[in-house]
Length: 245
Image 1 (tube, rainbow, N blue to C red):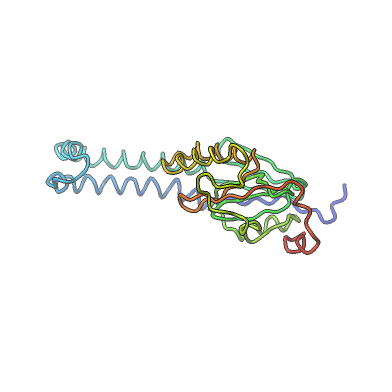
Image 2 (spheres, helix red, strand yellow):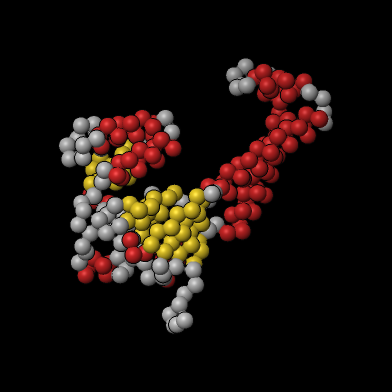
């Protein structure tokens, strides 16, 4: 086996520090919040506008030290639940010269470098585009863009510092011409899903729009779109140089 020029796989993640914050910090914050609630129930119970007033009055009637110990335990347990959710949701990116592997909870995705024209981070999402500009991957992440860029570039992937198609997006409004058949209805449905914070529905509708050749970018509750043009990905040598190829 010729090892000349071989680079081992690079993994980018939050690392042990992120896990320490999740599993140490969140339970401690929860326990602190529980202690604070136990210490202030008497004062809170006298406020007419406090939410969950019945629960606060019930806590205020509990004997000590059981009340304080109980609220601290519940707070710590809530912190552990949040830590578990955070651990499951964190993105781990492993990249080499041939492919990138994206892991989140029980979900694994692998994308080949040969299928990918450019990689970038935009709006806290790691995005991989194919030769036509269609999205192969869009994953939310808090991983530093500089670390991701270094990992991909080290293995020869084309990296862009921003979305190379950003200027092509248009603000969506109902019945706007230029969209493929059926896309407007999907965008209406997705607008409702985003407004109601139904993230799973919004992600599924994004995938359906992608099948129609529509790529989305969100700014708050507003949707911006562009249409993929098959065959438009035959880049010039100058474009390939800008993208790192």
